[in-house]
Image (tube, rainbow, N blue to C red):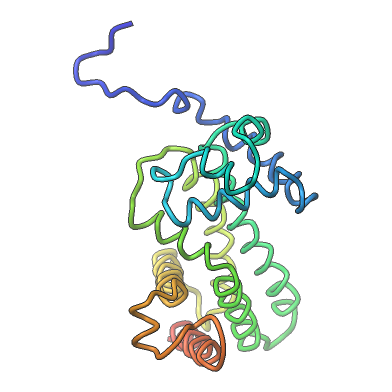
Length: 234
C-alpha cells in the first residue's frame, strides 16, 4: 500500500506499542527471580550497552555478545531491543519506588519523623545512584538525546513513579506544596543527583575526586541532603 504524501514510515514495532510493556513485566519478574539466569544476564548487558551508547547506538548483537549468548537466545528471552530498553527503565524505577517505600513508610508512620525521613531518603537515593553508575548515565541520556522512541516509557513508567514520589514529597514538606511546586522540586532533585553522580571527569577535577567513594561521597551526600531540607522548609 502506498503511503500518503508526506507520511513517515514507522518501524514495524511502532504499531505494537502495547507489546513491549506486557512482555517486559513478566520477563523482568523472571529475571529478578533468577539473577544468575540467561535472561538476567542479557538484561544486565543491555543496561550497560544502553548506558554507554543510548538506544540508537546500541545493537542486539552487541548486547548478546556482552551477555555471552547468541542473538537467537536474546530474541527468545526478550524479543527485541525495544522490549529490553523498556525493561531497563522499568527495572530502575521499580527499584527506586521499592527503595523509597521501604525507607519512608515506617518513618512517616511515626510522629515528628520528618527530618529523619528526609535524611534516610536522601541517603538511600544517593547511594543507589552512586552504587549503580549505569543509572545516572541512562537517565541523562534519555533527557539529552531526546530520542523519539514511543515505547510508553514516560506514560507507563515515569508518570506513575513520579505520582508516587509527589505524594511522598507532600508528606515531607513543612507545608502543602502545589502540584507545580512538587513537580519543580522533584525535577530539581533529579537534576542534582544526576549531574553529581554521573561522576564526570570535569566534576572529578572540580571536586578533587570521585563522588562515589571516600570522604567526598559523604560530603556531597550531606550537601545534597541539606539542600533538600532547605527547599522543603521554605
